[in-house]
Image 1 (cartoon, one colour):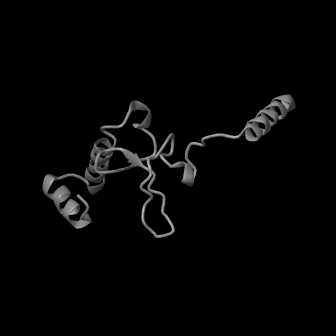
Image 2 (cartoon, one colour; image 1 turned 135 degrees about the vertical axis):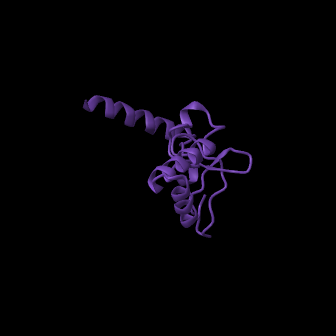
Length: 108
């Protein structure tokens, strides 16, 4: 129920406090929203689900609409909006990443 006044009237008719009814409604909406997601996504930040129930990025684009790319990993963002990195693809990039890893391990 999105209408706050209707929820207040319903809570009054049922003899409940508004906050109790609102909390129960939020919990039901959360369960419905994450019902089809794998276990690792259950308590994660609430993803934007498309019509097929798959998580989407939903970052606000420059056009002002949500990004429709598939949300990956924790946070459900696409690689364009801070999601999982594909890592270095060129030989030079792989060598630089390996050198940075060796430097980082040497500091500790």
